[in-house]
Image (cartoon, rainbow, N blue to C red; front, top):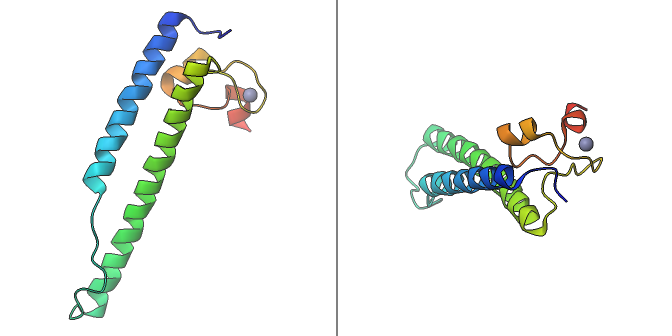
Length: 113
Ligand SMILES: [Zn+2]
């Protein structure tokens, strides 16, 4: 059984779903179709800038993707009734941790390590 009440779970679920929606729309906005090698006339410095921008973009995308994966995992755990348990020590994750970061996979003590 979860240490969270139905109401708390419901609130956290809504928070997770909202967050997932926001990330998905952000990922959409950031999505671009780079056409590498199509403009052979571009001078070197411009291309370097472009490459750098692209790798920043990739980093952002990667972070969003990981966040989304954590959120999906949390939602999945909710349906299985395993939500709110620390993955490291198996203890209940504190409600205040979940309220700030509902996709959290670790309790306060383990996170601090
Ligand atoms: Zn723990």
